[in-house]
Image (cartoon, rainbow, N blue to C red; front, side, top):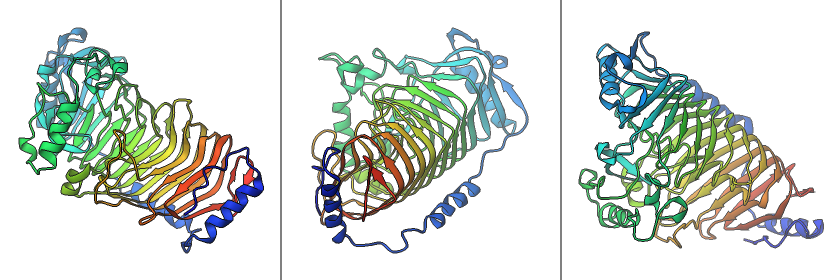
Length: 477
């Protein structure tokens, strides 16, 4: 295929048009490219079938179980007792009224809605010895590690709601320095995650060590996720504000029927992805604000051999009416997608920040492998992004080139009704493989302004523009 990255906004319209005609004369066309309404009908079916949790109309106030909301007393046991009582009574709402609650990790049980009341702030302890080992995951690889701050394993009918604040208390003195970056407080000679990651991935995951024997926690340096429903059914996370996360913020893994509604994530630490559905099915993310230190939303399905071992694609993911501010990407698939991702719907979102790198992003490599298929994006307003409106990179490697024998496949990416004021470096950036090209990418009713280059393309088959303007030029097929 032809790489046309040399055609920037200062090139003539004739040169751009000539390159486009040469490119598309070689492209294999997909039939029925205008079947957009049929595609979006699938979104309606997904949402209609998502089951919200239901709870008994009874409340369990943590103050009645010995909680003290003065910001100094450890409330782990009091909160746990209220959750147990609620579960034993058939479920209901565990309420944390206004005040400051210091606590260790909170573990939810069936039929419990944890309500963080308006004016309440939950401060998760900085004492790492109070974090028990649980079955969790780190960057797409399962292990036994520090408990997530709020955790549920194989539970049904659970929720975290309320207008209060969840504060992970991560900062340049707590959790963040383990990433090994001086920006986040790491000092030469201090411990960092790199040796632990090598042990987990090379000495355990690659060699097929059972998850129960992958013991980390104290003495290792892998940070916990914030909210993790693991293997859960019917989950609601609504309205809470989440700040100062150690690692990934909302991580529904191996879970089904998950609604994330109206939350605000404001956390700029390392790997502070806003919401990462992984091996997840039927996930609806709506009305949220993401202002993050990493991807705002990143859809995942396991890393390398661990993802292939689990072999559960993430599918039926709907993102609507969200605001993305800072982040590496607005809505992202990857890079840990070894089991694949399909059926992603994104609409009615606003993405805008000088610190937002891309709007829509797909990233993997031949070590990760995996597939991404059927991605539908419409009605997006992009104020400013740094690098690209759409980036598909099948050569992703944050620590250098990562190659293996698992050729990734990407197909059927639809963008419709997208308005971009300042697109950064590229309108469309695709870096695929000639032997297994990205297939079928469509832009319809898209207007992109102020990009340095119209696009840069390699390893792509059938890219089609329909009523699309980039830098004032109507791109013809």
